[in-house]
Image 1: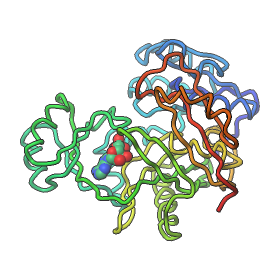
Image 2: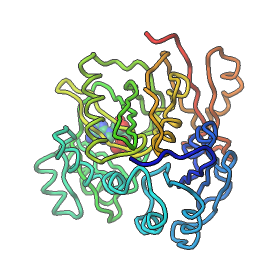
Image 3: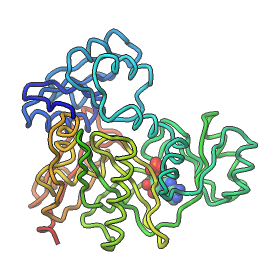
Image 4: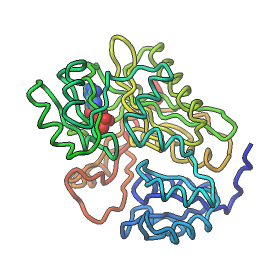
Length: 358
Ligand code: AMP
């Protein structure tokens, strides 16, 4: 067992966006300090962290100095270059571990991993060129979605193939990047499980939330989700299997499609997740504190939910409604302090506490 970090220890966080910011707040509540590593200027997490290093992921000296200054390193996004991780790992532990990053950085590796665990994913095939695509279209067909294997987020790096004649354009949209063709899953709705695993192997899952996306970006998460007791149990059990198989330490988001044939895993994210923001106002221990507890070697909170909550993302011009939302009863605002409002940019979220848990 890893020794638990004591108050005053420093948690290094790769990435200075809103997730890093909310992780920093949770860490400071437990008496830890945080050090953010972020290439961009004025990151949201920098406003609340103890220290910020502004440097690129190719700056080995800065990475080494960062790692030297902290007790453990975690991250708020999964697309960290492997070479940067090598530098850090020579100095300090990275939690969640490298295997979790390796699997989740590449959609093909991720789907092979999930299938290997006996879990259901959309039909898929590797596509690197026209002949791969022709073969994949023969087995998977349309409708389907071509997705870049790496660096996709919020629906970016994806092209829908509604009919076979769309295939060539979809491949052109990938701009030469390796991709996977995914059969279109006919789901009734989307849910996600936020799950945590500690250094001793204990697992705690939050209740699954129901997610609605607009333009490929998460719009709302509603608790409770529309799931039967059996589906709820399936969701939590499959998340636990994923965490165990990766010997995972930290919080993970597992996105699922609900179909009449059962739950289909869309993707996993080895970090705190936008669809877990509701936990800030629906649980005693939220996903951010849970993640910090896990990476610090502390006991996990139990993750139980005390309230029904609807989380709404505030994206771009939604910021114009902040004054109005601030007057609503039972609406907890969480704003990220981003200097510039841009279309499609996540600026904050609001958790509306609807009622005690139903
Ligand atoms: P992703 O970036 O892979 O999470 O995809 C973003 C959103 O696109 C998902 O939340 C779904 O709403 C939709 N989507 C992605 N893949 C599929 C699929 N294979 N079948 C149906 N819808 C999908």
